[in-house]
Image (cartoon, rainbow, N blue to C red):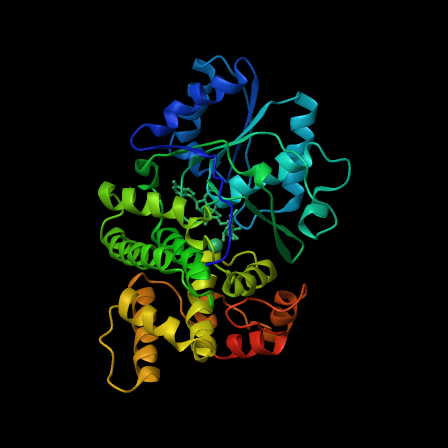
Length: 388
Ligand code: NZQ
Ligand code: ZN
């Protein structure tokens, strides 16, 4: 296990009506201040969540402004607009009501607020944020884990990049599993594989002696799969949503990577895909990339994959044949994705031919991907070819 320091100060309010407590939480540190609520393409309006959240803020004595229109795979242009409004109105807090796209827009704007240059500088390594406006969240889809993470992922043209800094870790996040009842099936499934991937990007490591976090990751992955399947059968299963909501928030708050060298190759490849075509849902892209990545890299550390096979996919080892056992586990993982009605091939992901060479070049533009096995553009191309 490697040395580490862990500090996760996000206050998490969880359960029925959690979103109605957000106003008093914000007032406790920004009493009498101005809140700019950022939201997406309309689901928060239709479900009444936006109105309830705004009311909770007004009841707590806060002044409320609103800015909607964040699209999935959020664009830098809207981030700039949010910065402009926040400066003009001298807001004190950004409150994201939505999923990863909305939260990431708020986080990026929170960084950009205090920066004289263009906010994209943070996403291409030209600048590091020094401080940010406080960001709070009301989560409406469990998936990206942005409600507790230090990351924000933004798209500029067809380049999708992430930036991370502790100053944008949300101050307070409200997670009410009832707000997930209105999610369509494809977003439920995409969220499930995204949170699994956040755990697996940390689980697939060559760092020795990380048994504690590995065992926790294995049981978390089993719980996510079990409850994900329940949600495909019943979109309003509150108990299952509680498990998935909790898992999603913890999958990406850094806990599962404590003391590990982490990987992040699947995310790097997926971001190149959904940057190339922003109609691609992040989780759906991961469902296509992950099994192909597994088949390509498992020889690097078969012991780790044997553990995945037995402890996560619950495969009985085939005596004397590790390779066959691992292949069986990957096939079982694929079967799970298909039961979640997720795509597992590029042809099922998007209705045009994927230019794999271009995507591989974009994915590795900032150097080789991953740590479990370092991947060059040629490796990424091979992984994508095998996912056709
Ligand atoms: O825009 P609206 O109308 O609100 O609809 C959204 C959107 O179409 C809809 N939705 C959300 N809550 C709903 C709902 N529909 C009905 N009922 C509800 N309660 O769901 C759609 C997807 O929303 P989005 O925010 O894009 O989903 P998600 O949370 O999966 O976020 C994906 C983004 O997060 C990034 C991804 O790359 C992608 O850009 N990620 C961010 C990370 C981070 N900041 O730490 C880490 C992740 O690995 C990921 O890269
Ligand atoms: Zn993700």
